[in-house]
Every structure is written in C-alpha cells, then in structure tokens.
Image (cartoon, rainbow, N blue to C red; front, side, top):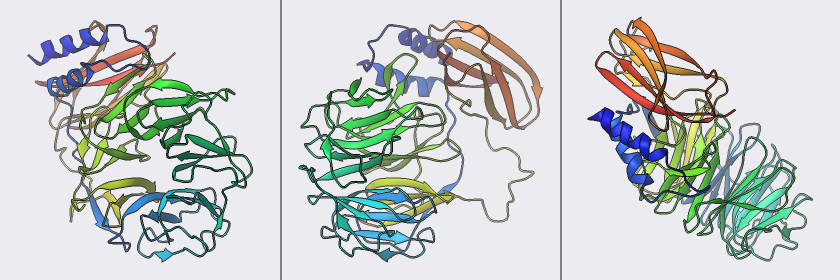
Amino acid sequence: MKLILLLILLGMLSSPRVAGQVSPHLRQERLNASIATDFPENNRSFSWQPTALTNLAINALSASQGGTLYAGSEQDGVFRSNDDGSNWTQINNGLTNLSVYALEALSDTRLFAGTNGSGVFYSQDGGNTWLPRNSGLTHQVILKLASAPDSSLLAGTQDGGIYRSVDGGISWFPYNAGIPGSSTVYDIAIRPDGNVLAATRFNGVYTQGDGNLNWDPLGLPNVDIRALLAIPSSGLIVAGAWYDGIYYYDAASAVWVASNLPNTHVMDFAEQPDRRIFAATHGWGVYVSEDGGYNWVPQNDGLPNVGVWCLIHLNGYMFAGTSSSGVYRGAETTPTGLSGRGLIPSAFELSQNYPNPFNPTTTVPFRLEKPAGVRLIISNAAGQIVRTLDAGFRESGDHQLRIEAGSLPSGVYFYTLQAGDLQATRRMTLLR
C-alpha cells in the first residue's frame, strides 16, 4: 500500500505547473507523502531554558560579528547580552520609542533599530546611545531591517513597502519598483547568490538581483507571508505565512510546495550549521525540519505555552524570543552518563542528502538499528526508477552512500533506502 501511494504521488508531481503557483491539491499530496513513505522522526534530544531576560514580549533578535546578542522588545526597548543570555543590560539612551520591531547589527559597534511609529534609530557604540535616522522615511512603522550585499540598508514598512538607504541610514528613499507601494513588508532575506527576497502581506514574495533594480514576483499571491529564509546550504527558499503554515520554493520546477505544517502562524526562521531549520510560530511553539523545509516536527521541550516571535542561532545555541516570557536558549542535550560513543542506534533513519540541490554528486547519510542488506532506489518525478544501488550487507550504525548523477537531467528526484523490511524515502534536487 505504501508503494502504491508513493507512485500515485509521483504521478501527481509530474503534471506541469505555472511558475510560482501552488497546486490546490499540493498540501494534501504532501501530507500523503509523509504518511506513505515513513519519513523518520527527529530523534535528537533538544531542550529550552529561560535566559535572564524574562516576562517580556520580544519582537526581534540580532547578533554582532563578535557574538553579542541584542533583543528588541514590545514596550521596553533594546537589551544586550555578552554571555549568551546569562546577563542582560537595557540600552535605551536616546531611544525615544521603546516599541522595537526590528534590529540589524552591522558590526560589533554599529546597530540599527526599527520602531513602531518612530522610524529607525542608529547606534555607533553597540547600543549605548541612539540617534534617529529618518530623513525621507515617511512610513515609520518598521517591521524589518536588512543589510544588502551592496552595503545598502533596506527597511520593510507597514503600508509603505521597502525603503533603501545608501548612506548608513542618514537618508532614505522608496524602493518599490515592481512592488505595490502600499504593501506591508514583513521580512527581507538575502539569497546565497546575493539576490534579495521580500515577503509581503497578501502580495506574495518578490525577488531582486543580477543588477536589476526592479522587483519581480516569485509567487504566493493572496498569502500573508511573515517570514523568509534563503538557505545557504541548499539554495532553497522557505516562506512562513500567517495561518497558512510553511511553503518551500523548488527552483528546479519554479513551484511553491506546501509543507506538512499547514494552518499555523509562522513568524520567523533560523538555520543551524547542521542544516536544520527552525520555525517560530505564534501558538504552536518551535518546529524543526531536517529535510530543507519539507517535513516539520515540534521542538518545545522546556518552552512555555506562548507565542514564539523570533529566532536566531548564535554561539552554538538557538535563541527564541517569545510573546510574553522573554528570551529562551535551546541546545541539544545528552542523557546523563552517556558519552554518545558505543551506543546501539535507537532507530532506522534516512537523513537528507547533502548538498541539496546538488551537481553532480551528493551524499546520503543513514542509520541502521540492526544489520541488514541495503539498497538505494532513485526515481524521477514521474515515478520511473532511474538508478538502483545495491550497497550490500551493512552493520548497525551510521553509514553514507554517494550518488553520482551521471547523465541525469536537472529535476526533482526521490531516493528510497531499503534495509531489510524497512524503507524510507526523501526528496532531492539535481541542478545542472
């Protein structure tokens, strides 16, 4: 039955789609896929603990190159920590509006803050003192601040689209060619190739780059997009929406695909160095994906039952800003008395290939709970088997298989690992 469901899914995915569209049935198809192919659960132990900044609503987190953490709050201004949240200092000298929606640390000393109604403030001493920087900025509810690859500063605003500054925030001008000027822009992200992405409320996702000053639509119209993540390790784009959950953009087919996390209010994303993606939600806590945004599982051990509004990875920790409980710090934990060596693997697991997308080779990690004969089957989007690799008998433990694309064309493929009577399937993208 599982194989039949998988083949049905692959046949659905082979139908043509318009760039930037989401199939009206795609969310249900993806849910069927996660059921049919036994995607492995997240077996890592991860827990959260409160930092010393408690009982506050935290709208924004940012970090300097030297590892200083900054938190922007709903009513109490900006806080700074130099020891991963163990101690915090309130730094509001000159900050006349203490409702801070956005932060952007450009260096160990240069810091920008976006406020709810008073525009942008600038500090050149790590937040010790602040000055307003609002010349030309006629829309002063600032929802996002981002430094572009050309060293300009971009500001996403409520009802005013995007503003740009090329002189360190001294002056601003509208930067909306191609975007409705009355758009609300919740997030701005930078892709690995330097192209810029913008998330709007009900106007979709826009992209800009390659020397083009105009913004081009990338899809998801009529969706309230609150968060974007351009994943450096894979080149994929993940979008989080209010109520509509998470989508990821498949560049090979130019299609947005709904994940298995629908009907959630997604507020922010952050990626760890191990390529896991964390998603902050309002009302559902934190979710994590190990396959580039396709499948999500909750990661809430130790978190209070409140909204999570922002995330950042720093110094080996994941930090979460909450709607009423301040900042939490999360990390993987090891059970007491266990070193992690010499342990019997606890589950059969097929991990995401890396790199992904790839050209022409990629590595597939997997884990066996018990010894078994191993076979890897690669299928295209039409369900046709294009490669079969008999990997022989493998002992229990962690293993890797290397895939050579050879003459295969660019596109979406599925790789299925069979180990005895167990099997699991994941998705990968070949980009020539």
